[in-house]
Structures are given as structure tokens and as C-alpha cells.
Length: 460
Image 1: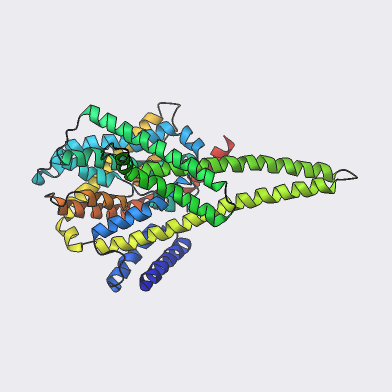
Image 2: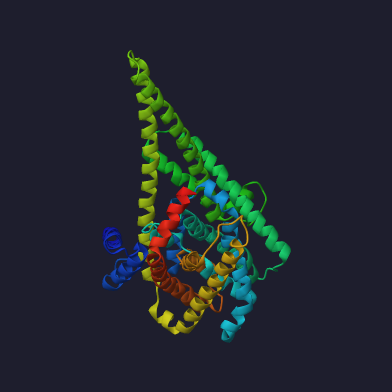
């Protein structure tokens, strides 16, 4: 176990050094170094099989969601709500519908049912916000573009998981899919998860008011995010306590996002209010210092209030840094574990299917982003998307560990399980390397234009 800790720390250190010195996004280095470690030292393991890997993802996923959610502001979500709804909900739904029509043709030799097609495509539609944020952090990009890409990556996961569990798996196990069922279950899961997440946020806010300790504040953030995630995923247990005898569970991802964003919003509101008070105290000091006979007590009180305000703001900022560090470690552990579950022989056996799925999902995503760009350029209610932004949004669809979690939910008796395993893992690997490199090329080539667009935002 000590060797594993040393390996994870060393890989993260090297990945961060490579990112700083060579501007290579840390996810690329983490994957390459993780595979190198696994082949050189196969005895150092975090998980022994895909099932344990899925459990590890569920353990670490909330901290990744918390870190990403802390970058979202409610004002931005309100401003871009329509755009994010299209990207994270409409685009995913249209992609699944497109997949239903194309899946039978793409994988004709397998005679996949509609339910199997939905399950397969839902797994590879889930994106990885960690990789996107890591790449974006190295460049000056327009704030609106970052909100669209990062927000879509975050909320897209929840939509893909809802489609996978409540539509795909439901149909795979014999359930009947109707428009009424899809509408009702989607509304129930989204509203229920949002309500649960917001409730946990206000509970966390009450806990925050009881402490001025930075580490206690960190624990409150973790308790809020993990608590909302866990209760949402096991919501049926709560219902059963009250005699409902239900199997319903909500979206842990959505609940965690709503909890963290709401809590962060309230913390930010207090910080903004403190900024106003800080300015008022500074004005008092300036006025008092200009008098020939100034009041020492008044100045002392003002200085004390300023010091308290600054200390609280720094505590909030350091807490965010602590969360980001935990997320980095969690992401490193996931990449190391992913290297352990890759079956090269299985990937080679289904290399044709992997390539077909990768190309199909890339084309579908490009078309969905093109539709989005067309819609935005025809309305004033959405941010206009130009060709450069279309390229960034298209290749921001890097896949991640959540896809493997979904994979582990498929019944072991499913006849095409091996093919699905190979396709999902293969698409994750291809998208991580190819999408990241293309994304770096697009942003790097247009770096100056993006910088100018960012400056224009500040002046508008």
C-alpha cells in the first residue's frame, strides 16, 4: 500500500512538471505515466478488476464534481441556462435518437436491440470535465466559451446517466419505454435531485456558520457534496423507511452539483457583501486620517473589521485550493486504476468496433455542436458560437471514468458485455489522446484571437 501511495504521488508530480514545462495537459501525462507504471511494476495496484474500479470511481467522483462545481457561478448559469440546457440535455437526447437509427447499421452483425443501442451510446456520451478544465486552465479563453464547455461537460454526465439507467437499462430488463414514462421519470429525477442538493447546501451553510476553521470548512464542503450524492443514489432507502417500498434513486451527480453550486453561491454572496463592507471601512479610514484630530478607537475598530474580512476571504480561497488538490489526487488514482483494468487482447479483438464507435460519436457530436452554433446565431437569447468555438466545443467531449461505472451496471448475463467493455474503454482512451491533442491545436493556433475575445468581454 505504501508503494502505491509513492507511485501515485510520483506520477502526479511528474504530470504536473510536464504540464508546467511542456504545456502538456496533465490528463495525457497521467494516462501515459499510469500505463508505464503498470507495465513496469504490475504488482502496484489500486484495483484488481473492473468492478473494483467502478467502486473506486463512485468513491472519488463526488470530489471531482465538487471541485468542478466550485468554478460555476449561479449568475453564469442563469445567463447561459438556455445554451447549457441545449448542450447538456437536448444534444444528448438528439444524439441518442440518432444512435437508435444508426446503431443497427453500425453494428449489424450483433443484432443489437434498441435498448442495447441506448445503453451503449449513453456510456460513450458521458464526458470528463476534469480533462476539459485542465486543458482550459493553460490558456486565456473567453469566459463565455469556458462556461459553455465546462458547464456542458459537468451537466452532460447527469443526463447521460439518467438516459442509461432510467431508459436504457430499464428497457434492457424488459421495461416499456413510452413518451409519458420518459417525461415523468426525467422530471422526477431532475427536480428531486435538485431539491435534495439545495437542501443539503443550506444544511452545509448552517454548519459553516459554526466554524472559522479552514479545515472544518473543507470538511463541510465534502460532507455537503458527498451527502447529497449518497442520499440521491440511495433515495429508495429513505422512501422505504417511510413504508413506500420503492426502488427509486435520484441522480447523485445532479444532487452533488446543485449542493456545491448553491453552497458556493451563498459563500460568494457573503464574500461580496464583505467586499462592500471592506470598502466602507477603507473610506472611514481615509476620512478619519484626513482629520487633524482622528479617533484612535474608530480607526482600531475599522482595522479590526478589515482584518476579519480579509481572513475570511483568504480562508474561502484556500478551501477551494484544498478541494482542487484533493481532486488532482483523486484524478491521478483513477488514471492509475484505469491502466490496471485495460485488457489489451480484448481491445485488439474489437478494434474495428472501437474505431466505428469513436468515429460515429465524434461525427454525431460535431453535428450537434454545429446545430447549436446555427441556433445561437439566430437568437439574441444565446451566446453566438463561431467556427473556432464550434471546434472547441466538439473536441471538449473527452470521455472519462463515469463510462466505466455505467459499464459495471450492465447485467453479467448480457450477451454482448465483452464487446461493450472493449468499446467503452477503447473510446475513453482514443478520446483522451486524440480529442486533447486536437483541442490543444485549435486553442493554440487561435490563442491570440481567443485572448482578444476575452479582452472584449471585459470591455462589453
